[in-house]
Amino acid sequence: MASHLRRLEVVRPDGSRLSTGPGPGPALTGLFLQGGPGVVVSAELWLHPRPGLTRTVVFRLPDQRRLPETVDAARQLLQRTPGGVAMSLWNRARLAAQLLPAPRSHPPEPFDGPWTGHAQLWADDPRALDLLHESVLRAFAPYADHWDTVDAGALDAGGPPGGAGPRDSAPGLASAYRHKPGGPLHVPPDRERDPPF
Image 1: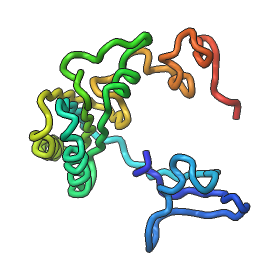
Image 2: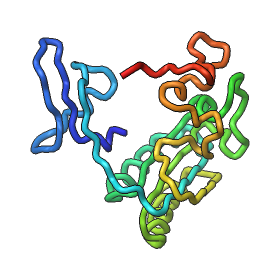
Image 3: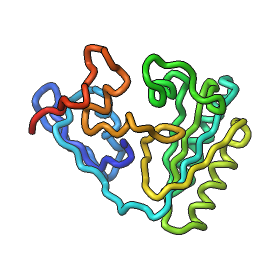
């Protein structure tokens, strides 16, 4: 979601306030995304119309030694594509934690590699979506050995490779605890864990 942040209001340890945002010079927003030298007290997000078409492309990376090259390919793809592409690379543990209920075993065989790539594409025109798809295939063809593509009508840019199951539909903070039945943080379906506002 960092790419969707327009501005952050931050309180620094000395009590002073700082506003990050678009403007000349280096962007400061990244300093405050995961901890760091201040407390974020408000955030502004860029809002965009929901696209008419989306496509998810998932691919397996069988050779962990080629991960640095794959990361470089992802960086170049995102730098050269003005919009319509979101990318993530997940290791086996992250993929299992996102897709499998506890106790976890193995992801589906096509994605049981050391790393799995997940590209979310969106556009309003079918030809533009096909061009984005071709760009992803060209970028990662030297590193991937299995591909899966799903067309959908709704964007889920942060979703897990291979789609989400019913356990991913929990609202609010409950979705963060969906894989911990019986654990100290498990949220039963009839209990609300969101803080009151």
